[in-house]
Length: 488
Image 1 (cartoon, rainbow, N blue to C red):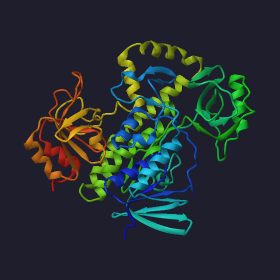
Image 2: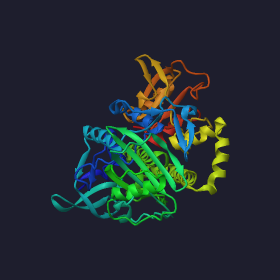
Image 3: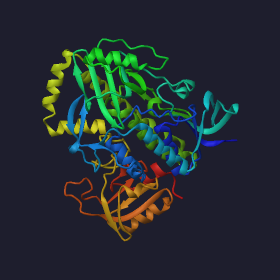
């Protein structure tokens, strides 16, 4: 007997986003979290442009209130104007991960996710029909069974280890300190400052709290199994900058390294991994949490479709096929940024060359797209070579018989969307065989720019994660079948 269609291990942003996506698509989910309550720590402070789009697609963005944004971003400490990006959103900063986690937790709970805290996973066994998860919690030891299990339990993932995922990569060569401090009057230096002894960053978060990061050049990483004392961070800060911050105190403190690893496969049978459980890297540009949330949005609707019985099991293989290359590229760009940001004088010529290249808009667009998540293009196997195929659908206001809407609002329900821009009755008849899985929106773009990728497009088929899988070329039924199962 199944306790749930899916068990998600880990109640961080990745796990909670996945739980919400599963419930939105009608799949039962239990979330297991070993912490009895949220830690309140906020390693991540930024929300990338693509993640804001994802939140907007689910109607979540208003819950975040006023998000501090900036038109500027950086690549390895070299400033980039994100105005070159094709999005209505800008890069967000100084928004604590703990708040993001709380919002996603509230959303998942409203949708009916069963979140169980204080429960530790101690064993995992899978067969051809499901997965037994052995747990220890407030009620003692027991076993839960689900059709699928997803490890969203962080860089030291228990699920990854128990299921036997390979996790190759490069070991740590340096250690960086991270803390939210009070009682220290530090300037706003959110893009970092390179000094002969290392690199430091500081960013005021409000209420007298300042986020600091410090990396001392030549200091070997430690094997930590303990909390980082603030005195150790203050000593490193003074050696790098010459400034004494020991009179302050840390609300919390931690450390991380530049180790870069990713699983060789994102799925082993009925067990999958997402977020830091699938990939770890230097947190350059705050991409880690955001990549995990986007893992969840790519996986959630697919896993629900298979669990609900209307999609074949091999749909889940597309999760690995699409996200594994993204993870590989993520590790590449964060390692490159680490060299630029943390390297010594030997890297200065490279910084100078890249600085000159950033004078070209095309270069800025490539690097901004890389760190914002907007560059992603999945191989969706569609017909034709339209530039939107495999990419996320851009935000566009639409006008139809039912008034105004937008490509973003059309995705709020978490289903696929067929956008019919030419009032094509035949196309709608074809798509009606997938009612309930695909919403049909008949409308015309409002005030469409001549250079918009939607110009001269008659229709689009968009997956629940916002990626375009059909642009009007070839048989729409083939795309509908591939992504949304057999017709009713």
